[in-house]
Every structure is written in C-alpha cells, then in structure tokens.
Figure 1 (tube, rainbow, N blue to C red):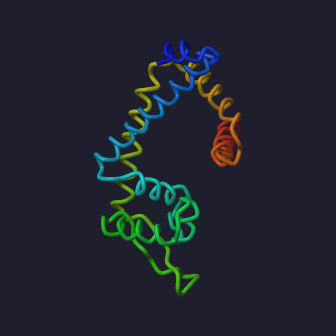
Figure 2: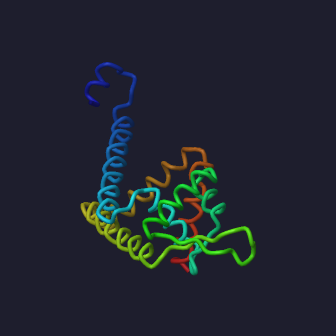
Figure 3: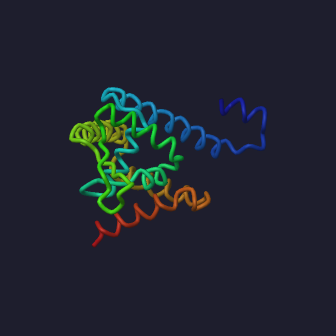
Length: 174
C-alpha cells in the first residue's frame, strides 16, 4: 500500500508512513493474540481489565464499584452490569464495605485470580515469542525508540503508563 500512496501522494514521507502502517499492523496482531488468549480462558477484555485493576491494587485486591468505574472510565450503570456478569461467571464477589454500610467491595474469587493469572502467563509467553525475533539489544533499542515516539503525543493520554514504567525502572535500578 505504501507504493500506492507514494505514487498518489508524493508529499507523504514513505518512511514515516511505513512506521505508522507497521505500528498499526502490530497493534492489530497483538490485539488478536490477546483476544485468542482470553477466549481460551472464557474471558473477554472487559473482565480481564477489571480483574487486572483488582490485581494492581495489591492484596487483598479489593475496590469499591465506584473506584473500579473511575479506573475503567465507566458509568456506574455500566459497572453494575459488568459486575453482575462477572459475579454470575464466578470471577468476582461483592462484600459489604466495613467503612460504608451502604457500600460494597469487589474482590476476585479464587477462580477469578486463577483464570487471570493463567491468561497473563499465556499472553506473556506469546509476547516473548513475538519479541524473540529481536535480540536483547534490539528489544532495548525498540523500547527506547517507542517511548520517545510516545512522547510526541499529549501526556494526558498516557501519563499514568509513563509514571508506572518510570517507577519500575527506578525500582530495578536501585
């Protein structure tokens, strides 16, 4: 397709367009890989991300529905529907909030923990296989270049991801 655009729109930089096209293709392939992994565990992305939010807070892996809704950018109604489906599937349970008589806490069940852990493990193995076409130095260089490219976009779109990555980097450097 790049050859067509180079012919039809000569002002386009084919190198830049090649980068963008390849990033788009890779994004699609990574998404498809994750979808394949999740389907093998009877998970969808919504459940996977909610279980991930609970895991990210650390033991005892509990959050209020409001905290989860904010973290996932959902309305309270959408969160209630998601929690209902996940509770029916045995992935999470609701508990009374000891700090708020009217509130609830959400936590993963043992099944929810186990399924999320297995899905993450399988997907990490898939991603490692994809990345194995590059040697260690090439992976480090690609990581550095992609972080630099991300900085060309408004920080509010990915500031939290940079902060988490920088914290991890500081922890491993010290």
